[in-house]
Length: 403
Image (cartoon, rainbow, N blue to C red; front, side, top):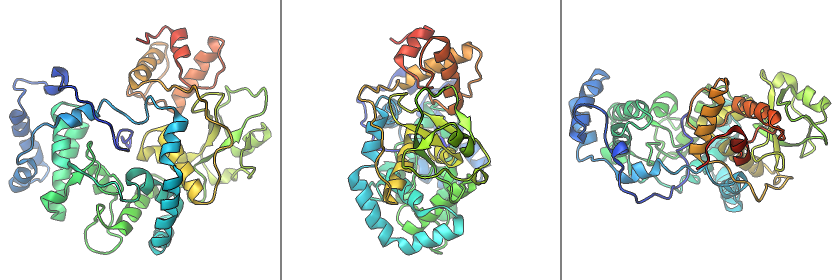
């Protein structure tokens, strides 16, 4: 993923004690000291000096709050409409317009260099850290060491821990500057250490990127990330659409001209982009089911999901960007009874679909567009409206335990 579905927002942390299943790394010696000792040879092999290693790990102990945070994800359990409304709020829109004016010169230069529209950059900045107002508070080494120690998404966080050491060493950052989110995402762009190495740039020309304090560096680094993920300049992320009465919702992928011929029109009345503006089919989906807003997603929507692998997040970013650029609210109301499945239930659904013979890429609870197509097929078999939206009713039809 860009593996960031868990990186945004301020999470309410649980107070339960660390469960033994999470508290112990697997091996002959399950102590944290043994984990640190075993980490050193790997760090040394990747160029980390002993002085850097000791500075990073000095005084570090497992952080119970980080373990608790892994159990709470902002994209799960909250109705999609509520989630988007909270993130693309009137206050955030107004603050974004003020910040866009303040940083207009940097935004213009970044847009010209990387081909990423300013409003997308502003929306991501606003979503990740509220335009820099939400400051990192966690020790990046303690957070990453905790996640690595308990083998959460192993070996991803163990590798990120070593990369973070390299960042401090290469850039000569002071130890106290190495702060992050609970999951190790750093700076106003909320880059994981490997992303900081791959995409952070010093746009201001000060020698080393400063994603904690330097706004031009933040904007340029975000644009560089999207550019390298193949953002298409001038192509919308997507848009709300209205499907005609009696439309066969099994249809999920088509060119823009094909959607026009099928009678699927943009809710804002604007024309579709040209077919030559994209190399992939545009995707129709219903994030809250047939009774909620419908969207056509473009290639750029998938690029946003590289930043955070969540449909709700990508819609929120796109919608905030549209509102900053003068667009209006959604035309269709979000359903009041929308109850997204928990992460555990989504994983159970993924496993059931795999058992039914569908190709499932992973079992982390993310409902990608392929899985939405599988859901459509199963909904149709079971006499349901094939809108691709996972629901409790579908789980019951498929015999998936819901308790």
